[in-house]
Image 1 (cartoon, rainbow, N blue to C red):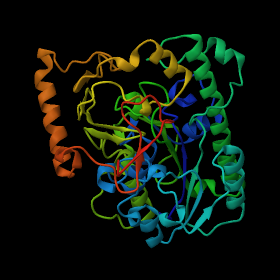
Image 2 (cartoon, rainbow, N blue to C red):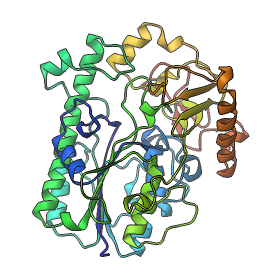
Image 3 (cartoon, rainbow, N blue to C red):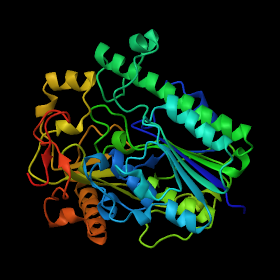
Amino acid sequence: MKQPNIVYVHSHDTGRYVQPYGHQVQTPNIQRLADQGLLLRQAFTAAPTCSGSRAALLTGQYPHVNGMTGLAHRGWKLNDYGRHIVHPLRAAGYWSALIGEQHLSDDPSVLGYDHVVDIGTTKVHSIAPAAQQLLRSRPPQPFFLSIGFFETHREFFEPSSVRDALYGMPPAHLPDTPETRADMAAFKASARSFDQGVGAILQTLDEQGFADDTLVVLTTDHGLPFPGAKGTLTDRGLGVLCILRGPGGFLGGHVSDALISQLDIYPTLCELAGAPSPGGLHGRSLLPLVRKEKSEIRDELFAELTYHAAYDPQRAIRTRRHKLIRHWGDRREPVLPNVDDSPSKDLLVAAGWGRQPRPEVELYDLLADPGEMRNLAETASFADVRDQLDTRLRQWMTATDDPLLDGPVPLPPGAFANDPAGSSAREPLISAAG
């Protein structure tokens, strides 16, 4: 098969809240992509944080292995930027370019792209035209383009529809109030802008005759920036949109319910490109699914959180039926700096949510309780499930040399974080030196 061009389009904080996943968020261009490609309904990130998620996808390794256990703009770095996917792709003959958001380094030149478009903003109104201009310049083929949109990260756009603010529903785990409806209406306005950016890319691929030879990978980093989603190891924090369209079998408007980790994108792209895969990958190629050689490529997923704005160490294992989340450390209350400031957060904090105790271990039956609201960790009839999952989680942590097994994970040199006992990421930061 001819090496496909690859266009990796990614957003901030969108979760699965787009039209083809059944939500009342009008995103017709994303719907078009789904209608033409493969939509993964059970795709999950390896970390519910911006840098950790992207680092896992682009290195094929869990954050505690690749080094990105916090946020790049707060001082975290990859252990080896040579593991970024542009390097094996270059070995296979690919030219690469970065346009817009990347969130793996304060200095994008260390990532290894052949060309970096730096225009000082990462919003659709600037990034989409820059990406179109690059495509119209007829870059060398095969190419790998990373196009990152900041849209759906707070601060959201102002609501563009009165109806959304009046009648729209907030996420199901939040109360239905004027504040949460207005908050979700603002998210929808940002999602519409994101969709326009996707549409501009798709239109230009068609216009330039690239569409038939280009694999488009559309995804986001983690769940919505609302309380109880982003920054948590619930499905609300880990579940992501993931749609692929193009050569290699990613055509036809198909839907897959197989369990997928974003870690699986890396080996998939390497295999399609004929690129050498480095050792130590934690993902598995999607191609056996696409070729219908397998109905599943994994029976469990692992996910992690160490730092976001503040330290909040936790690890999770998810199977088709169950989820176990284990919290480390002494803190047993929500870490509010890790919850984006918002009207929804203000509403819950005023009602006392920030003082509610958190259990050390959470266990959920995802079939009977898909919202992960009833913790079964202390339920006698689920003791065997808890013990089995806890054993598998610790085996994974041991096999991947998770530093959390040795005690609290310190800030790396030069990094900054918030006090976990604080109330907002906007508060003063503490450094590695204390």
